[in-house]
Length: 612
Image 1 (tube, rainbow, N blue to C red):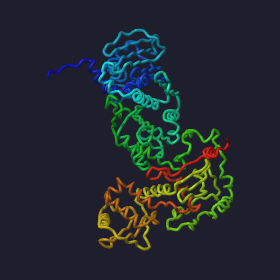
Image 2 (image 1 turned 135 degrees about the vertical axis):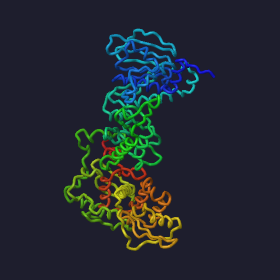
Image 3 (image 1 turned 90 degrees about the vertical axis):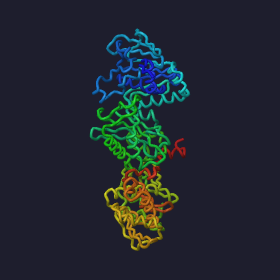
Image 4 (image 1 turned 60 degrees about the vertical axis):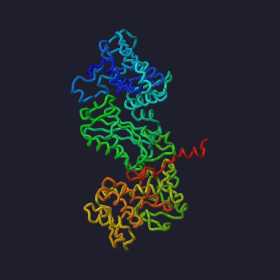
């Protein structure tokens, strides 16, 4: 077959297949051009989901008369001029394909006035036909109208979805850009109706406006820098999770990207606190030297490559992991009125809580709390002691926290974000009173997280303390369990010893537990040993202590956690609260469920219709 040169119009239409997948793709390219032009106000108007008309008006630097024709020419751009520019792209656009591709499959009109000129000029194209340049009426900036998208490629137009679907994609593209530039005002209209209007604002306010107050209320701010890298933005707490990836926004030097390396680092950071079939929500901005990232990977410019991917992965993981590890007392609360809570503002305009700290009514500065507790519970808490009279089994939380803070010390409730315990419900939930109102704690989930973090820390430092049992506990074991013990004792990995276990083989069908980790000394030794041996057998000692170590330690922590239907004394409940405040990620259990819930005085007042 004969080789032929393709006509320019067909070349542009082929390129349009990659660049202009749908109206939302065209909108993205036009918005990025407006931002590259230095615009501070961008207005978008759509008709019929952007298929009938897509109009973008900005107040940027504009296009000079002599450059208007080049604007519709393939591979013509003002962004780069050399290979050195391409290897350190700082602008959003640079390929010189977008406008030419859009114009080749639509009826396009560009009106623009450069800031240095007195008059505006206009050029139009009808597919392959480009008009001459003529004067236009425009105060400043550029207006681009894209009409009848795919009018000359009917086969491609048939692939478009309904008007509502195409508008939904356009709106998402608009929001992605609006999130990335809170220093720019944006407006969106559809079929003549204004739907979104964002004034110039601080990033936190823009995030709230675009993604909603609930997302903002359940998010953690982060801003970390190291070795020329910066990661900032907001990440939702694990308790605010989604069943899809619809609230995940990552920007590299201001450009929205979908990158597998970044996504993997984020998943790893959330792995320890998020349920496996749920997805986190976040708006994160990665900033680095443009020469360290290649954005010329795909015409859509949503894919990137990093020169040192491992360093980027480590930095993102550690920055986000650190943010999510904030102790409970600082920011891990789950509130009952999420939609009305603003995490970027103080509790009240005067910096004070809008309600009196009701705990002060029992006078924390004196010994009156002791009388209060004696009246309510029939017991008087004393410092440095634990009362386990209500326990019917060896598991005692207070054994781990013997010197907890109790309210009859000279304390101020403001110093303790989770407040002080006042009751326990059905042996499952601890009720506490803090300065905001009521705190409800799932005691098993909270204790499980605490023990899990302690086990991780001990294993990281290779210092899991071992507690010899006064009387070794023997049990009937199957041959696989016996073989697992023999293999781990003979291997260099030493899985059982590293985890704080001493298990001996008494016979081909009998094992004896002679020591367990000190932190797990009250757990059922046989059940705990069987579960640990199962994990070691399934994954191997070496892998269980590296790739699967969190799952293994989670199993152990679950055995150590105080069980439901266990009555806790007041000192024990307060010990739990104090340790939660000091423990990383204690706002969620090992499976991503919340461990505590805040009910404000305002919420309580609404329940009882106070003030009405």
